[in-house]
Image 1 (cartoon, one colour):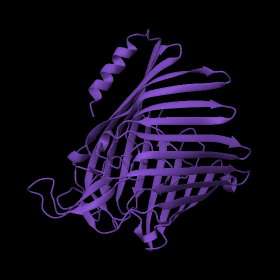
Image 2 (cartoon, one colour):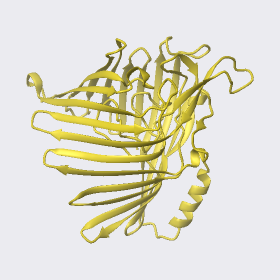
Image 3 (cartoon, one colour):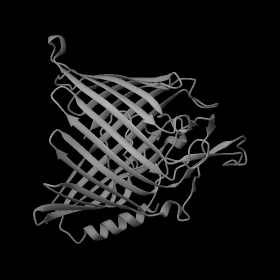
Image 4 (cartoon, one colour):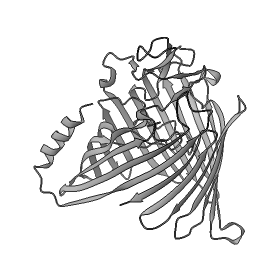
Length: 393
């Protein structure tokens, strides 16, 4: 992608306005990870050190216009493929009123989130996930888009034009339903336009009584690839089979609902997707859903802390033909917020595969050390343990 052309166009456009105010903020993170032997490939080191920088610049360039630029840089001390840069956000925002409604337009790179579930968001499809950064936090790659939002008492309507597809970033090996193989650095597309196929998305959201809901639709290149097992190699020196990511043209319809009562939050996400292959390589239309409950216990045992308990069930009607890990799984988690001045939080969760009798767990501890420094300790099942220090400015 030619980011230089985008920056040049944005700079030429912005020079026509008188800048009123600019703000700079962001994070600098230093992280150490220790990987288990079960997830490291031959020749890979079992530990690494990571430096990431994520600044954000916000500037008002007119009465009803502003720009946001948020690049991202990640350096990995042991894995060159995990060192990368990205443009998380870089857009021009224009907004105003239209009769009794309000509107805004964002042009450029942006990140959008849809959904209400905790462990996996089925309806969230606009941006590509960045699996190099973290397999559970689901950070996103910046997506080029034209994003129109109109909102009023009747709800919020959003329309997206997405002119370029971002390929999913992978770290190491992928464990699919068949075997563990290296992933090719190139990808294949169903569309002849490949990454330049123009995609469309729409979402309507509103609140009615106790319910917050969203209805969404997407047509275009899937953000989730299927895989073709091939004996080809990226380089002549590479031997054996590889998995080639393949991106189909799909149509997806989704709904997400959260019902808020005094004692419980009821959550649901559901999709119907057409045009995607299953793990057998055959096209199969399918439906999937996440159903969840969330309850917060305030000041348990007379403490000042709050304990939030979450349970979610994930189901895909393709069952054993599903690509990925979510076909019949149960997620249980607890979040303990100490409500102290340092923002101390402790969380634990487990995902149980009800068909394969397999599970993955995670532990996490977070705490602010000062106004600018924060600490995060985590263990992700049998994959890695990590320590992260973040400086916010």
